[in-house]
Length: 120
Length: 74
Picture 1: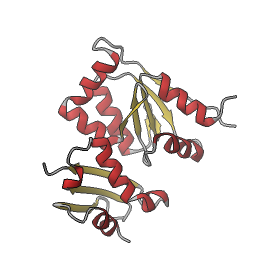
Picture 2: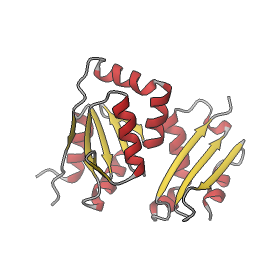
Picture 3: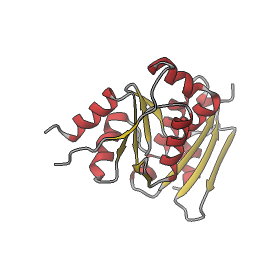
């Protein structure tokens, strides 16, 4: 089994848009996670969500990798975009859609999926 | 130190430095910082500077939710 660190790095590196959040898109457990999802959805992003709540180690490992202390964290093609405030601000300025277009192409699907990490 | 004092220490030249307790419970904050320190920095790096200034209360869980608004002065 891969370590937690490896699993998180895989999600960040392999998913077009990765969102580490509290809860899932079906059951959001935090206002900031909700704001980030809404902005991404409105900008036409596909979303791969990881719930950080099942184990505190998920958040610890994630912050070690990203250098970002808070949740949610949004990554596009492996690059940290930021938390809810930045995602929202970039959406409002039109930059989020531009960055998604540049990274993923304008003709993209908007699938939403959830990845569950394996906890040892 | 309070959130405001931590930000004051990190951004002594801030043109605007505002901390709002959004819920009145002392753990949900909206902070606004306008400072020349942010000139030329990406939004991500601007927020990193604020997160760094508040690393202690973020780390020990005394901030439950943080909303950040930053701006340079240029």
